[in-house]
Image (cartoon, rainbow, N blue to C red):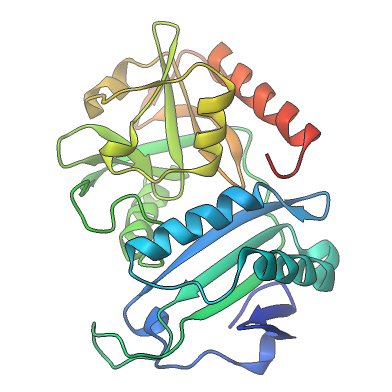
Length: 279
């Protein structure tokens, strides 16, 4: 285990990051069998923790995994880890895996593994470039919309983006519609309307996405991926970047960065964050 937070929480106890504690036969290691959540730490608390824990349980249910601790136990554990790591706790990750298992896809009857760790929060650029990758998200997959630890597809796509001078990769789905980034949701401005792909597109039900749908007027619509070439403005959302304006899509410079819809969304989210850490 490596990271910038010195103290972890694994299956009910705090321990040093150098103490081990994860079996090499854990299904999360051998086959990527697990789910996770990443939250930003705001004023010493994990932002929107209630929503993150609810999504963790939805992902676990979709994977037919049990979460071996109650929400109250997990809240206490999150507080302990943040307090133990102090200023180094800028982002927090909760990881649930299938626990020890055979060297294959079949699970054993072992108890799932649950880990909580922190790391400093890397600042995001004020705006970002994105590229559309040649691979498609499968909205018909049994794990579509789940936040699983099987991220190899995202690793390859993000590497492709970096090789093309961009900070994020954008996927279409198998229907050819706009879907999501490797670790973000995407919103676009078209003719004064703020549009984001519906969950049926196969995109992740992002926490910031969920909050913005509640805070501002958002139209959830399928958009052919080619429509990205027509948008007036666009932005990415995630739990650690909040709202990040998009400056370029492939080689096209967007007319506005940030545009008025982007600025309104960012302001609404900032105001919410200033009011509460658990909206």
